[in-house]
Image 1 (cartoon, rainbow, N blue to C red):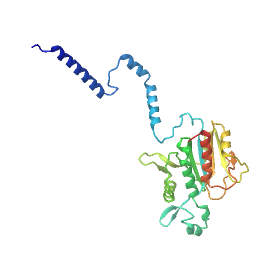
Image 2: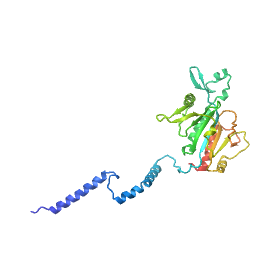
Image 3: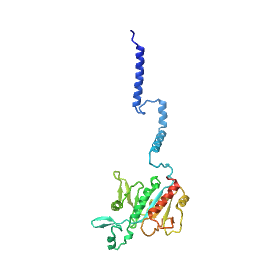
Image 4: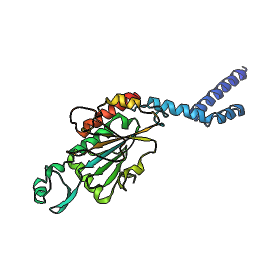
Length: 282
């Protein structure tokens, strides 16, 4: 009986081919040998392929607003909260942020007006700015707060502020004592006290807009924003005090956006809504 060498040889060849396919399936794409022509082409177009892959990954990310990269290169928004009621004092054995609710007796004994020490308006105004779609879309450039004592500090757009008055009060005490608040584990200064005046931090090509109930210029905020040049940064100056008005020399135009008195937080919500409609931020 003759051995079927030919059949045996065919089986071996088929097995070797199958083994090679298994080996390539286990290797990475970079480890698979390529022809010199193909490798040269991929070397020239590597950057373009990387960009396409990055765009595909971004498009697949859920719950993140996708904004064109060149959309906000021309202009961005800045908020300045003036005359904020932030004053610390040693009450008992510790330093505390003076509040009309908790320190009414202390303020009366020191001949201070309790109505002038209410930081709830500032707390709500900051939350409205940071929670707005203007900030989350990347259009917010910076936020500044100046107290009634003249202390100026900056808040980074990606800072996460406390959601309760008590924790916010403790954060402000720490800020006014240490002059900065750093991010946990990173060392980045999310809040920091800076030197006056605030105008040195504002872009040259910017429009400073103030809001006051005593102004005679009643406008619709959306119509006003639509008339401003798209290449100009907008600086919104809002009073964060409980009573009174702002009167700053660097403000170019004072507007009245409602016939009724409003809180700082509600005024900011009208501003951010107008900007979102103008830029179609959803």
